[in-house]
Image 1 (tube, rainbow, N blue to C red):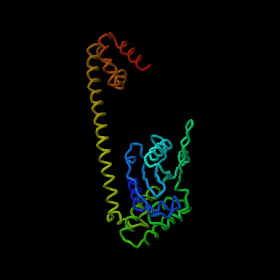
Image 2: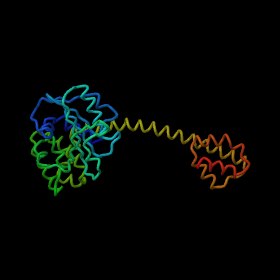
Image 3: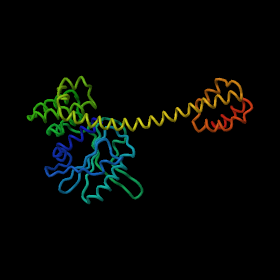
Length: 296
């Protein structure tokens, strides 16, 4: 979540840098679309829509290639809805951030019968870092670019960050650089070149942290509800298990440990079914036959 908020901040604060790098355009007339598409459950790790005079840039960052639904289908879905709403040219770019050998990061289209939809894919670890070193908003991404000497590249980025004149901007870019560098560098190495104090002092870090905490709280609430439901179901299953074992003991006498272990594995529904038929059992063999039946 920290990466999501960091990338969202960079694109929205420095849209010209991203437009120049990705579209080779010098336009400054850029609008950040606060579209309802961003709230859809299909959204990726980080999604931003930038609108220029003649097109929309749909920009996605992915830390991992795995996606549900699959990324190609999601890109088609976004394109259709964006085109229906804005009826203009749409450039879609997916930027993968973390090095991987997964074949998914080489897929650049959705294909089905009578339908093919293409989009651009950038694997940032294959990109030349030099263009990224030229713009403040791209400096954090430069730490993930192609290099034969990662430590030297990190040092180069740190030098460029230190040359930013406006102090608040320097501090914010330093924080974003440290956060994204954490995808590939050890914290000790990052601290050698970039000031850790910027984290505590930076307003953007506090903003990113708060957004992450808010989403974490919401997810925690949702997970808590799910866990509460699961715990309630498990408590109900255990109560039913105890009741079934008591009834079986009264009906058949003591139950051997092997059968008790098999009973422990039954679901709540299976235990309820067993509670209905156990009065017909005359011996442990009947119980064993019943267990064998449901497991077959």
